[in-house]
Length: 288
Image 1 (cartoon, rainbow, N blue to C red):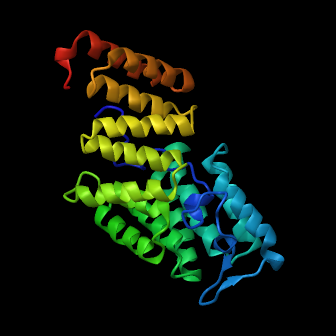
Image 2 (cartoon, one colour; image 1 turned 135 degrees about the horizontal axis):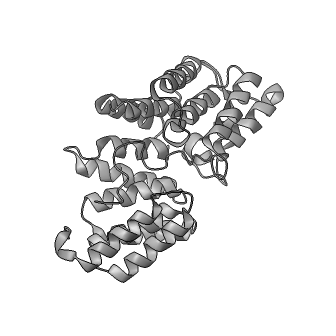
């Protein structure tokens, strides 16, 4: 379906927050221990000399909205400099690097190599860090290694069943396969764990559309707009859904115009509007 996020990077998965790298909790409820310096074979270390690295890590984890993936890379990189044993920061650095392939123009293979090196370091420091296993699964997603991704993400969930990103990315890895019920279950679980994440909820909306549960998908996209009224992807997604699955062409055009206005810097943004208009005028030429 047009407007679908597909099986690439998982939509704009780069909108990381504390909830994405700190045990799947939202910013207001993130447990301080998850932001601590986890060391090999030992408990979370106290603040002490690592307090600066903890603060910088939190900045990186929240920095991708409104900041960019490049900003997050700097935050996480600085955190690892201040505390070379800060496993969670290495995992965040790996994610920030990988996501710049799609959203920052970095060269794919060279960037994946560097990102994987950071994630490997995180796992060396803490072999049971769920976020690092999920990050490694993200690398496999970027390489199209779906079976490896599923195995790694299941490991992450085994270590931390409350880590929303692992559920989200596992649903993405399962998408289009022969286990649609499992794919939906993980998409729904991710949204339960991180209900205010636009990226996580958009992933659920895509799953509902693939399952042809169009009315639920429309409600899901409307909820995304409530959470973030400035999200062009939510407006365009609901616009496409109205045009191609609900025959609500006037609403579709209005929504796509809104999406184009919000994404004025994108030269292709207006194409959605024009496609919806053609579909409205010549419905026989388009699948319902």
